[in-house]
Length: 452
Image (cartoon, rainbow, N blue to C red):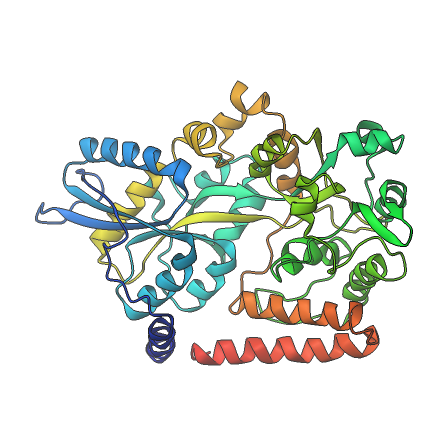
C-alpha cells in the first residue's frame, strides 16, 4: 500500500508541475464556518476541529452552500469549515494531485469517473454512517428512492464510501416542431427500441440535394466520455460489458460490443443518418437542426427554453433483444472523506456531509441538483416537475459506467476504435480484438503504477 501511494505522489506532482497550477490550499476563495458537537466531530480534549471542504465551481449552489455551512457553524460551534470553490477547469487535476501528495481536503465532491482511481489508491474513508446521522449503511440506501442502483456508484465490497450531492442520467429530448413538420407526434410515435429509432430518424432526416440539413437523431461524438455514457449502456442492455470494475476483466471483443459498434458505424455510413463530421448533437438540437437528442440531463431544459425549442422528454431506447432493463448510464457526484485525515476530522467531515445532503429540495430548486431522497421524491415539487419523474424512472433500473482507474484513457481507446471503423473504414473484426488488448494494457499499466 505504501509503495503505491508513494508512486502516485510522484506521478501527480509531476503532472502538477507540468500544468503550472500548484496553488496552495485556500487560494481558490470561499468562506470559513466553524462548528462541532458532543456526538460527532469533537476532539477528545474539546479543541476546535478544522475541516477543509473542496467543491468544483457551480455558481447556482455557492450561496446555498455558504448559507447551510453557516447554519452548521451555529449548530456545531467547535467545527471550523474551510469552504473552497475551485474552477471546474482546474478541479480534477488539483484534487488528484493534492490527494496523492497528502495535502488534499478532508471532504470533497467528485463524480463517478474519478472514484475508481481514488478507491484503488486507498485514499477514501468508508462512510461513518453514525456521524452522518444514519443508523448504518443500509439506512442510507433506504433513504433514497432507487437507492440500490444509485448508491451502487459509491459502494465497494458492500461498503459505502460517500453521500450523494447529485444523481444524473441522460434522457431523450424531442423537438416537437420538427416532429410535427414530419407528420409525427413524439407523444405517440417516440421509439422505445434502438431498431425503432432508426426508422423514426429516417422520417425526421431532411436532405437538400445530397446534403443532410436536418438530422433525425445522432449520437454525441464530441467527447470520448460518451463512449461510456451512451455506448456502454447499449452493450450492458445486451448482457455484455466492456470492463468489469470488480475484477478488471475486459470484454471488448464480444458479440455485444460488436452489435453496438455496428449500429454506430451503420448510423454514420450505410444508413447515412449522422456521424462525427456534423455539428455536435447538443449544439445541433439547440440550433433546431436535430429532432432527437439523447445526451442532455434535466439541466438541459433551461438551455432549450433559451433557444426557444418546443421540447418534450422521453426515455432512452433499448434493444429489442435486451436482457437488462437499463437505459443510458448513470453518473453522480458524491461527498467523500480523505482517509489520510485525522480520525476526529473524518468524523466531523461526515457530520458536515450528512448535514449538507439533508436539504434535497433546496439544492434542486436553487441549484438544479437532484438527490432522490424519499421525502423529496414524494413532494409536490418533485411530482410536478416536467422532467424529473421520467429521469428517476430511468435511474431506478440503470447502472453506472465502470468505476476504474484510467477511465478517461479507456474512453479514448474506445473512441479510437469507433473512429477506426467509422472514419477509417477498418474491419470491425480486426479492430475489436486489438482494442481489447489495448484496453487490457492500459489498465495493467495504471494498476501497476498504483502497486497492484
